[in-house]
View 1: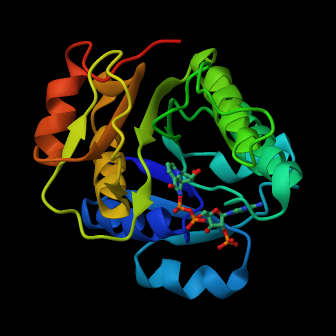
View 2: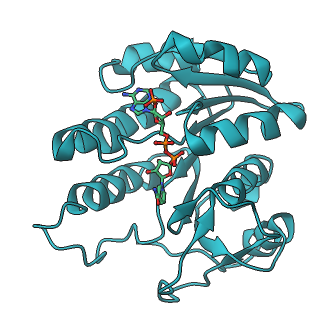
Amino acid sequence: MAKIAIIGAHGKVGSLVVPVLTARGHEVSGVVRSQDQFQDLTDAGATPVLLDVATASEDELAEAFAGHDVVVWSAGAGGKGGAEATYAVDRDAAIRSIDAARRAGAHRYVMVSFISAVHDHGVPEDSSFFAYADAKVTADDHLRASDLAWTILGPGTLTDEPSGGGITILRDDAPVPEESATSRENVARVIAEVVGRPRTAGHFLRFTDGRTVVEEAVHEAEGEDAGMRPQ
Ligand SMILES: NC(=O)c1ccc[n+]([C@@H]2O[C@H](COP(=O)([O-])OP(=O)(O)OC[C@H]3O[C@@H](n4cnc5c(N)ncnc54)[C@H](OP(=O)(O)O)[C@@H]3O)[C@@H](O)[C@H]2O)c1
């Protein structure tokens, strides 16, 4: 069992993954920026940690991660506050959290990125989506360049639909399908699965809703090149 810190623990994905991890016996710390969210985390079996990652220093983040084995990033500005807030959270805070995880001795880092997080993402610079794509790719690059045992998750467009039974992991350089809906419940299940599978380290797992049960899909991907798309 691992001690896991989740950044964005009260977000839509975070709220789904915390109870899955605690039910599996992991010790979970939920990093949130509002005390109003403490009770929900406690109810889900996690320990709340108050930290605004946009303003927290690397030192403060490292202190919060001390004693943890795994750091999971599932936070995001969510487009609120424009490009400035997007870069402050999705890029700069994510990068500080990666450096802090190393300093704190957490050996594993799971990043929730997105399905098109590659350099040639094709989002034009004048698009309102550009800052997000650029921020995520830059943070992912920083993680890849670290010596952490990283796994980057690339779900498609997130939905609040139930899992629907499974996922499809995109192989190698398979193009992003036009329909990339991905249930947040599936993202939570994939996070919980990769945390316990160190052989998924070094993989960028791009996935959408599909027909293969999550455990099987992740197991298939961990031993081979499937789902791995190095930059
Ligand atoms: N939307 C999509 O289609 C899509 C697709 C692929 C990947 N993703 C990624 O999936 C991940 C999870 O998405 P989601 O739907 O769960 O998002 P969400 O519901 O918006 O959750 C994001 C969480 O991040 C927290 N957060 C934002 N700024 C923070 C700060 N400065 N300090 C501490 N916490 C902060 C928010 O806290 P508050 O509750 O205080 O606001 C919120 O709980 C994100 O990394 C996102 O980029 C999204």
